[in-house]
Length: 380
Ligand SMILES: Nc1nc2c(ncn2[C@@H]2O[C@H](COP(=O)(O)OP(=O)(O)OP(=O)(O)O)[C@@H](O)[C@H]2O)c(=O)[nH]1
Ligand SMILES: [Mg+2]
Image (cartoon, rainbow, N blue to C red; front, side, top):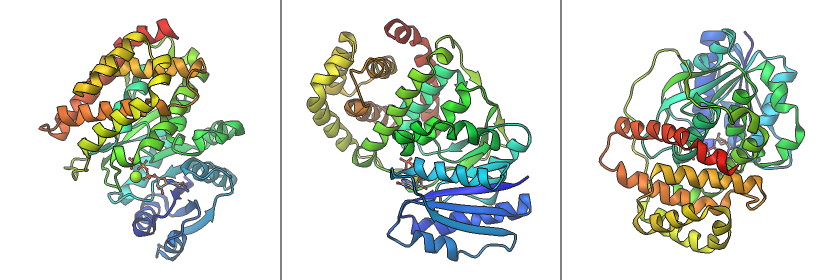
C-alpha cells in the first residue's frame, strides 16, 4: 500500500522534527517506505528547515511546501496535502499534527492499515488528560454522536487516516474551503462528511496524546468559533441525515487498546469564569434572540453558580444551530461565553476525579444529547 504522511504546520520547529522521525520509522517498518510531506503556513521559526533536515531512512522521501490557498489555517494545509496525495496516487493519507510528543511509528500503521482492510476514514482514539480537548468533550463528541449516531470519541483529534476515495469527496466543492473549514473547522468537516456520506469509519487505538495543550479561556475562543461554526453549517447541509437518528452505534476500535497515565494539562478556572461573564454581557442582546426564553434564563442562572448541566448545555447548542440556520447567528462566536461557563462547570465537577471517572461523565453527556434530540427537532 502506498501511504503518504501529511503534516500541517505553523511555527512548530521545536516539535516537528520528532514527528517526522517517528513517521519515517513507521513508513519504513510497516510500508517499505513512503513519502512524508509538510504543508506549512509560512512559519517564521524555521519549521520547514527542521523538516527537510531531519534524518530519515533511505526508503522515505521528505518534502515540504508552503500552501497557496489564501486563507491561513490548518484546513488550507490539509486541503493541499490531499491534493498532493491525490496527484501522487496514494492509497492512503495519514494526517498527524506537528506538535505531537507521544507519536510512535505504530501510529502510522494504526492510522493507515485499516484503510487497506476496507475502511475509508480512521479516527484517532486516545487517552487524554481530563482537561485536554474541552471543545471535543463538550461539543464535538456529544454533538457528533447524538446527531449522526456514531460513537466516535475524538471527531476532531486531528490525526486521521483517509482513503483515496475520500479525497475526491472532500475536494469536490471548492466553496467549502472558503469557510472555517480552511481553519480549525477542518477536522469536524472531515469526520462529519465521512459519516454523513456513509463511508466506512473506524477508530484506532493510539494510546496517550501528548501535545502542546492550550488553556481554554486564554486561547480557544477562535477555535471554538471555527469548529462550532462548521458544525452548524454541516447540520444545515446534512439535515436529512441526522434527523431520523435515534440511537448511538458503537464504532469499532481497531487494534489493541494502549494504556498510560496522561500528563496534567493546566486550565485556569478563574479566567474561565471571568471571561464567561464578560463575554456574556457583551453578547447578551444577540444571545437573547438566539436562545429560547427557557434556555436564556437557564444560562443566566448558570453564569452565577457555574452549575451548568448537560441538558441545558445541549439546549444551548441546539438553539445555536437553529439560530444559525435561521440567520440570527452568522457565526458561533456569541456562544463562546457559554462554552467557557460549561468548561468551568466541568473543571469544578471533575476536580477530584481520575481521568477515567471524568471520561464516564463525558460518555453520559452524549446520551443526554440524544435524549434531548426531540427538543432540537421541535425547534428546527
Ligand atoms: N499550516 C498551518 N497549520 C496550522 C495552522 N494552525 C495550526 N496548524 C497545525 O495544525 C495542527 C494542530 O494545531 P494545534 O494548534 O496543535 O491545535 P489542536 O491540537 O487541534 O488543538 P488543541 O487541542 O486545542 O491544542 C498542528 O500541526 C499545527 O501546526 C495554520 O494556521 N497553518
Ligand atoms: Mg495540538
